[in-house]
Every structure is written in structure tokens, then in C-alpha cells.
Amino acid sequence: DIVMTQSPDSLAVSLGERATINCKSSQSVLFNSNNNYLAWYQQKPGQPPKLLIYWASTRESGVPDRFSGSGSGTDFALTISSLQAEDVAVYYCQQYFSTPRTFGQGTKLEIK
Amino acid sequence: QVQLQGSGPGLVKPSGTLSLTCAVSGGSISSSNWWTWVRQPPGKGLEWIGEIYHGGDTNYNPSLKSRVTMSVDKSKNQFSLKLSSVTAADTAVYYCARGGAAVPAGNWGQGTLVTVSS
Image (cartoon, rainbow over all chains, first blue to last red):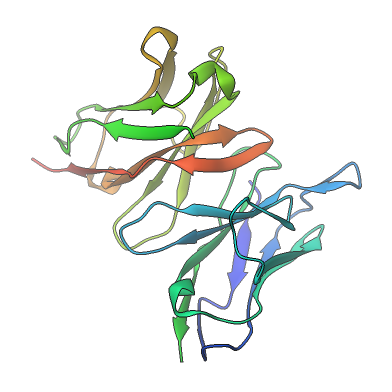
């Protein structure tokens, strides 16, 4: 199984500041030197996860452009350029390169 | 816009079988290749259970494979999950989602809380 490890487990950032969440996979999720099979999800309390980013850096339709994804191979990051109050949530990375399609343990993002 | 609605018993007895259904509306179940089940124990993270192709092919999490069965009913535009020999460790919110294989889960149902208890 590919193990996904996120850091940090929790993060407190001031409104308007940048927030960065890291995700490391135990093996590469890059296929054909082209696509990274890595997604980011946002989950607010009492709600299902919401897809934010896929192919490591492609924003899902309707997702604000303050959210961006980067990285390749085994090291990835989700960045929120200017934190808004509505961004308080738990964020998960997931690899869909191979089965089982594993998730990171989650990063809880709060307002400082 | 495709919407998913999960349903099933909220309480299952230990050693019993958990059975959930996910109804797809706003589109045909055959319009998306793969459909996925994910679960989340209370206060914990997400666990991928498995995925099913609209034609019936499946991929299951090896940790659950011996107890999981997924199926598709095209006539009812829905897909289903069965998990046998449940224990308290199977207590979780169970989510159905559109996507799987090389496509991440883009549409999710609201989730069904299933509690395993006598």
C-alpha cells in the first residue's frame, strides 16, 4: 500500500495569511512522467469531503483561486494564499495511483 | 449535476451484515465509469473501502476484501455496499462518491452513519 503522510497534523494561521499543508507518499504517484495521481479534499464538520485539487495541481471547477496545489513524485503541497474564515476545515490528500487508494491522516486548519 | 443519496439501516448488530445503497440522480450510473465507497469512524480520518465499475468490475481495500461486496443495479440507477461480520470497529459514516480508478471522487453523498451495537 502507498502510505500518505501529511504535515503538520494541525495548523493555525491568521486571516489573510498563507497556509501550506504538505503531503508525502511512500512511493511515487507520477505516471508516464506526466500526471501525478494526487488529489486534495476539504472537509468541514458534518459535511462530506469536497474535491479541491486533482492531478496534484488542477483546481476543481468552482474552487477559489486562492487554493493551489504543487509538487511531483512523492512530495506535494496544498497552499491557501490568503486564509479566509470559511477555509477552516480538515484537509486530506489522497493518491489514486494504485489500490487501495489511500488518504493522508488529515490536517486540521484553524484561525490563529 | 449528478447527486448521490446514500441510505440504509443506521444500526447493525455485531456479526451482522451492513447493507447500504447509493441512489444516483441527475445522470445515468453508466455515465461515470467508477463509483466509490469511503468510510470515516467518528472523529477519525477517511478510509477507502473500494470502487465498482458500472459494468461490475471491482477493486476492494485488502484490509476489508474478505467481508466486502459491491454491486451495481442499472435498472434502479444505484450501487450498493455490503460488509459482513461487522464489529464495533466498523462503526462509521459511510460515504458513496462518483469517481474511482484514475478519476478522483468529485461528487459525494451526504454520508450515512452506521453504528454497530447490540
